[in-house]
Image (tube, rainbow, N blue to C red; front, top):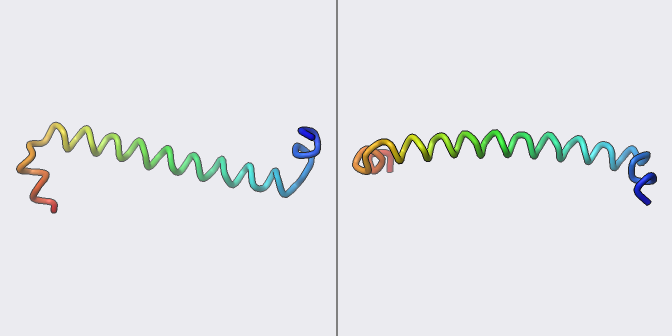
Length: 51
């Protein structure tokens, strides 16, 4: 079963696509983490200005 999936071109396409998507998501997540870190360092009054 595993060897079938390895040779299936559609599966390969999906795997590449999802790997790219996961990469994008993890990049966004790290940016979000940095932003959260930044907002924690900045005073709450500064943060409320954005909203």
